[in-house]
Length: 283
Ligand code: G4P
Image 1 (tube, rainbow, N blue to C red):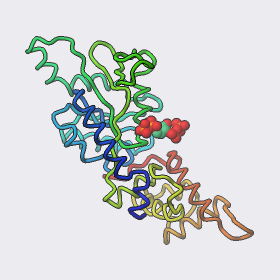
Image 2 (cartoon, rainbow, N blue to C red):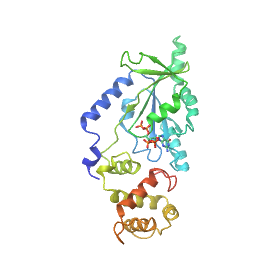
Image 3 (cartoon, helix red, strand yellow):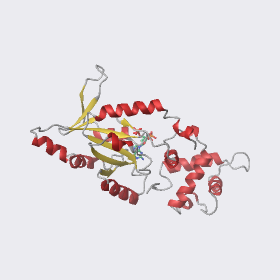
Image 4 (cartoon, rainbow, N blue to C red):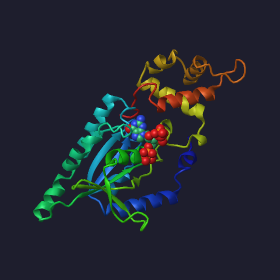
């Protein structure tokens, strides 16, 4: 994948705007809740967040944990904790794990709450913002976390277009619009991994190339899964694997000619929906 292909959704003006909004909102909050895709915790992360959110309490959510390798989820949580962040694996779609966040907020903001108390400030709610690159599940998470029970505070909708705080009990307020981070394009692996999970517009990608690359990755990291899903041998080149999937899934263009594009589409779709198995692509 070329630089151009990656950057198509992220021209500099777009990034500058995202960064400015993030900086503006950062001033208002105590806690940053960073949402990552558990399948690619590194590539779905923007290292600039450390600079942007310095001095803020931090929570890292490994979202889409249902699609990722459970063992890898555990390892990644340990990793983030070793970096001083509080981490949790969740499935924003079903809400699994989301209940654990309240406890984590208290842990992450313990010092701040103490500081407030010493200064005689009691019951000032923690203000939090959800951040992450596109498609990691930020909106799904806000819905799952805030749910229907929440009440919006701040400006009245329709009157001013200001920020909306979602009040979640006495102790927490959440900014209703997530902060959008941009991926780290300079790194080629990041681009490829984002394309695997569907965060790059498929129309600009050559599906067969993406598929063969994905086949190599899956075979290396999770030998046996392709064999099981498609009843094919995992020996030989990645192109051969794609051909075997086309045969096994009866993808033919005309007569006996294999339709590799169709096979590629099936593979990628299966991967994105977790049908090949739960996988994490980064250690
Ligand atoms: P964003 O705000 O960060 O851009 O992401 P958004 O919430 O729109 O979620 C992007 C996609 O990821 C959505 O799928 C959403 O349903 C899915 N998703 C979010 N969290 C999880 C999770 O924990 N597990 C799984 N398996 N999927 C998750 P979509 O294809 O856009 O819509 P749909 O498939 O829900 O209809």
